[in-house]
Image 1 (cartoon, rainbow, N blue to C red):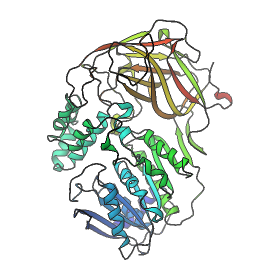
Image 2: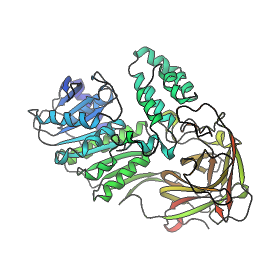
Image 3: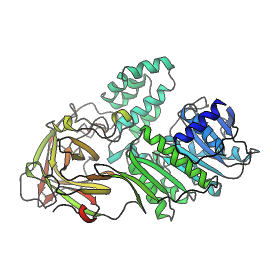
Image 4: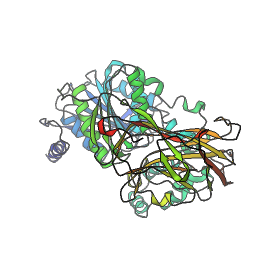
Length: 553
């Protein structure tokens, strides 16, 4: 009775379409044996009606907590819920090796489902973060049996998120490695470490060489962390079987995508959306004001995902949905429905000028600005897309903007609102005394009180030969930033930060070209940011033109 009541209350809290909750029968720890003999522990939540469709969730994070609630919600709504622990996690046999076994293990699980007496011939998948990678690994092979997918803060390819800008997403990767290891520790020991603020992880993020950082964080070597330090070049054969982007276009099931503007996988997830659209599919896309671990994201994912599965797997009628629903940040923003992503926009250049000015007019002749980046005192990252929700998202950037190794360029107060929706990029012309460097660019909204709130950002690693150099030794570095939807209010100002790094979100650039995991020698260096007619450094914004929202001249 209590589980049924909790299920009913959860459905009401999520504002799900009402159903009469039926009896749910739960079978835990089913030993599902895959092709190499490894046993994967699996839970089955069975609805009252046996010939119902199935929802498969494969996870490395255990089968308890929110997943138990989700299993009951699915079964109460008339679907079999099958929740399985990936190998090496949650009591399953074998060793967890990210992305290596998910395609085969998923296929073997699907084969097991086909042999069950309650199998109806149709299934869907649901997954958050790594659970979503496991979905994409299986999706193209499932053919017509796969009737719906719900992919939440996830993507089919992890390589470009791991090495965003061809740097290394140190905070995300090492924090995730520590989180996975923490699942194996005794509960009390884990709670003590969390209460202390994870000092071992903090020490590891600051440690060099990076090849020792996993031991500092966890006390043991983490094989995948070591592998990812070694296999970081774009053409690494290692990643060929670990990414599934080339299979996305073969997926015919309706796909719902839920993500946040400050999610670590947002650019990659939008690449999946573009691939589906190019293949003729009409996925549903929801982007909210969330980070990877926002509580609001979890609620939205359940509401959106269960409704999607009800419609496409359960055959329940659903209210009309726009293909794209997104939250526009900033004063006067809010939720918008759109026919597609990205919407039509006019790309407008906001140029860097002398004296720290940012303006839509072209630059005039002026000497460059100069900063000195010292990897021994790396420019810190502050907020933005991070794995841990408590440190992620929008923050006031004054502590980092006060540093001498950060340049800022600020517009005049806006005479009218400026609305930006779509991909954002920068072109920074830089001359450096070191051949190895990083270029970090961040867009901020400066409010009427002078607080500088981060909107989106990006970083690119520069190495010899990667970008052309002109006769004066200046590099033109294209920097893709995270996409955004944001409304800059009248009276607010746009601000662009330019820096030489954002540590530990990205691994610091040692300035030497040493291998990623081995660098210990650190070289500081000066670089000049150019802003003259021959080198017009600029931020390029997709501005939505609509009545009073024309950009200022």
